[in-house]
Each structure stands twice: as structure tokens, then as C-alpha cells.
Length: 116
Length: 114
Image 1 (cartoon, rainbow over the protein chains, first blue to last red):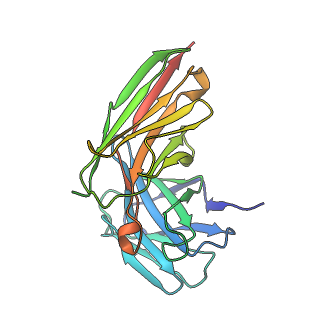
Image 2 (image 1 turned 45 degrees about the vertical axis):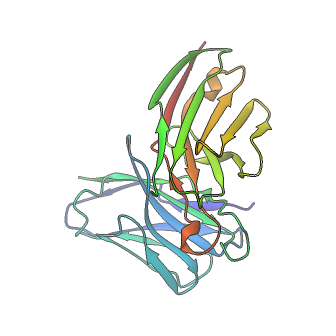
């Protein structure tokens, strides 16, 4: 059963704590992405990775960090430096802009993070 | 120049109506225009996509119209149903390199009344 999984579905964090969101895909996609979604803001790109052991900042990378040690996994850490972390976080993947001409992205079910 | 402007922000139609959602872009390098459908609490799902070599694409009740000269594209939902109530996002990207990242509109919340 191919797809993208994100865990946990809901996450609660106290102020000042770091927290890591999981994203796994078994689609054999090269590229993976993290987006943040706030009401009325659409989807904003946090980080993306087109290949293992390499990643780039998106539009709103401050206060976040990522790693890409395996092709299947792209965890996102929300650090205490992120001033307003409460949001819905979405992970996506695509074949890659090198192997496919168009960036057809597929999304996971999301993680809702709430800072208490 | 990287923005995609989507309108309206919200839309209410009666069952059977034809909601139309519009998007406009500036970057002439964009050559891929997908639409995503998102239900509350779920991730967006790819609905339909168009490339600039065609002016219209239909998949079931969903149609994309594309106007290259005006740099606009629209989603039409024929015979809309209450189950179509969701938030719809348009997006655009250009092929190749980091410029291949999708640029999303801010979304349209559609409500179809029974």
C-alpha cells in the first residue's frame, strides 16, 4: 500500500521545547517537502530535499530544521526558536524535477501541532 | 512575480450549480498548473492538472480552463454536490531545477448547499 505517512496526527508541545514530526514515503520518490498551513495563508514551503543528504530552505525556514539521511524519510524539527509554531504541517513528495518534467506532488495526511 | 493569486476566498453555491475558481500568475516560465482538493483535517489531494499546450482539460465533473495570453486559469465544477465542499488550491511551477517547486494560491473554501 503505497503512500506518505505522517506521525503523529496530533502533537502538543510546551513552549521552549523542540519537537520532531515524522514523514515517511514508500513511493520511491526522490524529492520531499515540508509545508506549513495556517488558515487563509495557503501552503508555505519550509524546507525541501531533492536527494538524500541534501536539502534547501524554503520561504519560511527560520525556527525549523530537517535531515534527509534516507530516501524514504524526511523528519522536521520545530525548534524553540520558532515563534508561532501552532499550525498544520504537511509533508509531500514527488519523483524529482530531474526524472520527471513536472513537479507532481503528493501529500501526506498532516500533523496538527499545538503549542500549549 | 512568483505569486499565484486565487479568488474568491470563499464560495457558496446550491447543489447542481457550477462554482468557478480563478487563479492568475505573472511568471511566464510557469508550465504546470495543478489543482488540489483538501477536506478539513486532511492533506491536499491532486485533483486535475493542465499544461499550457492545451486550453481546456476535463476529468469527470472537473474542468480546467487555461488562458495563456491572460496568464489565468480556472477550475469549474459541473453539477456540484455537497460532497464537493472542500478547500481548493491552485498552484503553478516551472520545469527544471529548484524553480520546479510549486507555488500555491491561498485557497478557496467551497460550500455546496443541498
